[in-house]
Length: 236
Picture (cartoon, rainbow, N blue to C red):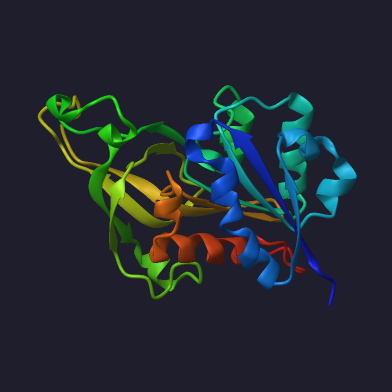
């Protein structure tokens, strides 16, 4: 059996601990038989031969910028069957200036609502709110999320702008709060898949910090997502 090849690309905003976060998953990949290459920038995306031989890209690059050549290489690889996955800002808040990247992923971070203004102290946890990740009917049947029940988190709750080509496995709902301007609850996708050509994409929005990634539900979803997104022989 040919060994699967995983490419881990990390960088961008340090607040999401791209090195520590990705290191958490390297043992899982290796124990599942992947040869793992780690890159500290997106330059590798422009290497057509390397990308063609990659079965899975795990990206953790928040914000940052990407060149036209690099993005074209990533998009082409995914369309040809390379899997693409990641969590939180490392995939859903990457390359804000690129509409083509947004088109590939299908959802973009818009905000994470915060605590009451009087409770904010200028720290990261100003935006930590208790919320629930709710499985959809599709999610209860999907191999990535099957057997996982709805679960609670106290961390950033992503509000995501998205299109309807994504298959939503889990959602989270932002309630109406007196200090916020919206007038009815807003439900955002929290976990989704997307088919792009022969490739599979998986996005998991929880994952602000290592402790969130270590939550057994979050970690299970991300790890199963890696396996599911990996290139398949049939391309389906």
